[in-house]
Amino acid sequence: MHKYGPIQQHLIDFLRGNGSIADDVDPEENLIERGILESLLVMDLILFMETRFGVHLGPDDITPGNFRTVKSLARLIRSKRPTPLKKAA
Image 1 (cartoon, helix red, strand yellow):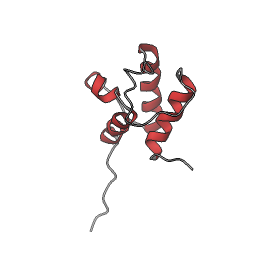
Image 2: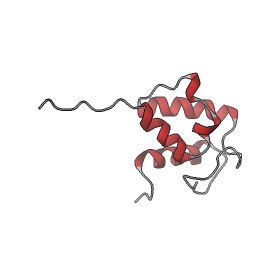
Image 3: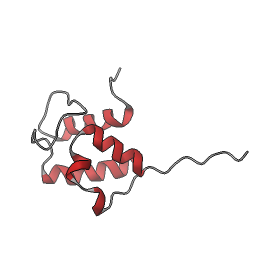
Image 4: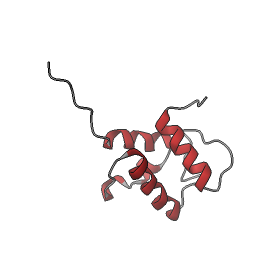
């Protein structure tokens, strides 16, 4: 059983599988300061996020603030996902 939400868990699994880390990543841990996110991994992460979550990330989305933590990445993904259609009353 995963201890994080599904978006955060997918991001953590991606980082563990593609980064230079073997241990778990805390969703609030600074990925940039820890050296987990390097320029090439950022490009792979963007492609993963767009493909896995069906979002489009533009140049304005690629900021240190959005990529600082798993939590901020999950928030970015949620903000870019299309909102579900409401049923007509």
